[in-house]
Image (cartoon, helix red, strand yellow):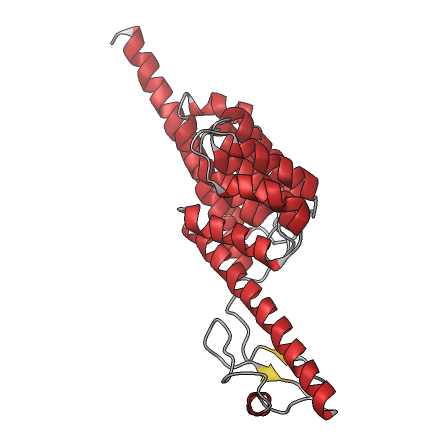
Amino acid sequence: MRASRLVSLAAGALLALTLTVSVLLLRCIDTVRSGAPLEEVLYVSSPKVLKRMSLGYDGLLADIYWTRAVQYFGGKHHSGVKRYDLLAPLLEITTQLDPHLLVAYEYGANFLAPAPPLGAGMPERAIALQEFGIRNNPDDWHLYYNEGFVYYTELSDYAKAADAFARGARRPHAHPFLAVMAGRMAEHAGDLQMARMMWSTTYDTTRDKSVKANAAAHLRALQVDEDVTVLEQINNRYHQMTGRFAGSFGELASAGLLRGTPLDPLGHAYKLMPDGRVEMAKKFPA
């Protein structure tokens, strides 16, 4: 047998062994207690080592780590765990193995940045992830949008959010909303309309089902916030007129302050509380 053939067989065997060990180690994580230190469960944490082990199959190994990142967060979130210590390392390893796996950056912006239980509460790590993505994919406007999104929603740093949106707006084929967001950021920072526009943009442009579902949930929550604010203002006006809060929406309608019974985004009627507050009848499903 020729030497080149022996080398190919040896390399193939090593690759098979490497991938098998990686999968087994990934599965072992499921048995580790949720509060375990990071070092106990992170198996091979160096992308450089992993690149050497992959023998050129960086993309395949990146897919394995990406799949594990999604499973890890989904499993933890479903079980109600409030710590996601492995999410950032898994996403960082994934993107360093395959710097062009754009969905991993989007996932990081949506689930790495928000505070628990909706995310890992690591906005700085999410921004660093986006910056790594921008360095490797400088013409993809989504990455600038992701970064501005984190600055806006999680850090309330409207100047840096505006800068990220402005940089993204200059990329080829950028979504026109980026220029609008950059221009309106200082004037409309923190208002519901800006937040709705951002989540709507996320919903309309993402291809990832979990990110789309997350955006839809935030849009529903924003609608509830707006509805509750308006309804409580109406009830306060009724209190000024009558000296008491309304006991039903029918009373508000009879006073000419409201038409019909307002429904939340799930189709349930809101509840009027004795102290004038308005609440949802049922919480949104997790």
